[in-house]
Length: 215
Image (cartoon, rainbow, N blue to C red; front, side, top):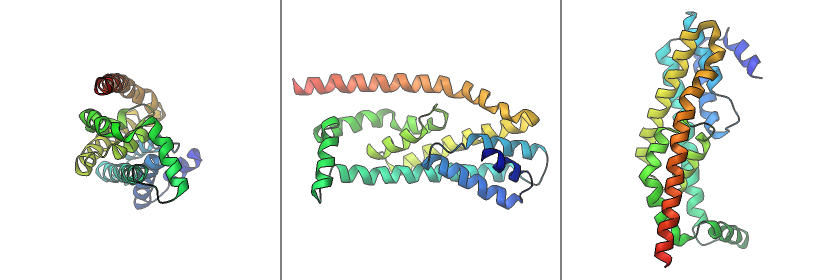
């Protein structure tokens, strides 16, 4: 399927390419298995070939798509969080809420949100560089009720920088654009390691503080 899309992009009208970029970047955030990075890097290669596609327009539409998809999941997660921590309207919803409360008790949510907020916006800012964790960040940002405007700015900045790197990589690699994955790992792994360490420290701090409160 990806090979067919790449073959089509080589002969598509620039406006159709921009629409494709927006959609692939949008749905990559909503449906994580969709591979968005490779097609974006390929567009960088098409820009290298001077076929009517401009770097600025490609960057604009990919950034809008990435940010839009992230914000959609974020808003849906806020809605889900409100329902999970509201009194159930029916027995099924009530039982489901109680099962969630066993792992995340309502009494701990305020403390958990405070802990997540300390690093949450940084996590959103780095989300495009995190290896295999992009969808998780948007969900957690919503469940932890991070402020929408700050989340939007952080997601926009992250998408802008990451997509600029992908397009630039495809442009400068030329016919070797498929090697973009190797270089993307060089960016993603160090950032992911730092993020995992931050999450581990936050969880440890949260558990420790909860024990003090209970004692």
